[in-house]
Length: 282
Ligand code: NAD
Image (cartoon, rainbow, N blue to C red; front, side, top):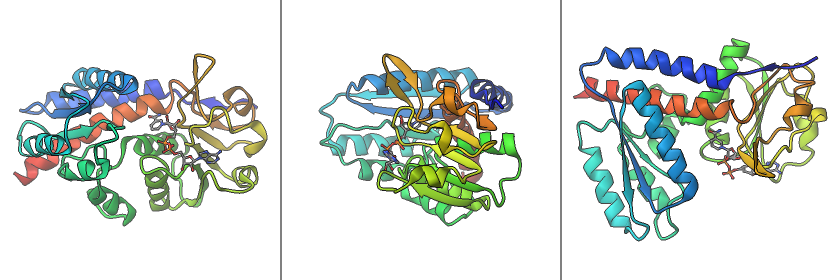
């Protein structure tokens, strides 16, 4: 048996096309602000991609590129200005920040209505409490979209998430609990991981360990989502050994071309929805 390979690029393109249609009908242009402090190579690339994606759907994206030595107060002041700017509907602070800055304070200074990354405690609290109106982090939201598109109703399914980070593992665990999955969150201290994953209907790998998940970790027919982005011998690869695992899984996402494009699409969707909600409240 060979798995259905999920085309995340196509799925993301469909979401973006629909979004572009909806945005065309608005009588304003949604605005996204990206704050980038310093010159981290990967962050520069990510932010350029976000700007390109935003502009392709009709969102106006401004990158505020601040020097490495910017102080905590200066970053907070920039956020306060953007919080009060009517033309800015979404604010992203690119991580990682230089080490002299307090990331937690900075993330939580973003108005919860404009926190389109969904990293602030207010939005996390809504999600974890299964309350309406949470802005949900883009990567877990993209994973959920792929799961529901492929499997339909997730209720009662046994899901294992490898990784307990604030931006992927934890929010995804809440999302899947809210969809009535039985969820296990594994991490670097988990024992006998292979025994745990091999009983799962859904395995989501988000640990950042290149090609760790092998064929004999997966129940035949299970759905495998690979969030990982790693570099091995100059090539991009995920946390799943794709060539092996695709022989047993029912569905699998590739790297690249799986979860990555979905993350960017969901970020744009979050910005559009945040803009609608802000106008409703105005
Ligand atoms: P992180 O480093 O914050 O967290 C990694 C998690 O994996 C931790 O909870 C850790 O306990 C767990 N872990 C580490 N080694 C493990 C092991 N051997 N066995 C079991 N668990 C282990 O990482 P993150 O920010 O959540 O990102 C995870 C991966 O996903 C990275 O490769 C990252 O680049 C990628 N990522 C991709 C996207 C995307 O859009 N595709 C978005 C975010 C992160």
